[in-house]
Length: 181
Image (cartoon, rainbow, N blue to C red; front, side, top):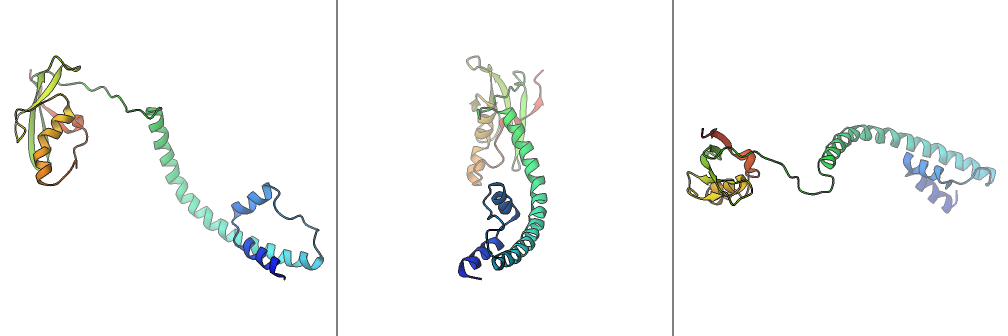
């Protein structure tokens, strides 16, 4: 075998099934019958080595593809759901129902208990706000559930260097304790 043939044989040994299929589909493989009998014999040997290598690679590839196909399917399902829920990449606008004015809401955060009261705030779109009843932020009036959550837990989060750990959505943070009726 000459140098060029050795290089080709080494390159062929590194081909995967996908590489071989791509070459075949794009007519990039050399045509048979253009070489001498000696070349044809060495080509057959290289082909059989290549087939053995590609079959081995294919079986390994199929095993890894089966494992990853399950995770890909679940990721695609999640992605499609998110895309259908939020087609233009905009923030989702979720409508929440405020408790009645006078209702008491409560929350426990990292071992401390917080309470707030729903108050009337006619200038706001919702017409309601939360007045924090206990803790360092007692007396603070906030125009949203999330702001009230952040204000109520601010001192505790600063003292314990917690950042925003566990406080991401005021609507999930606060629970109605007393409806105020």
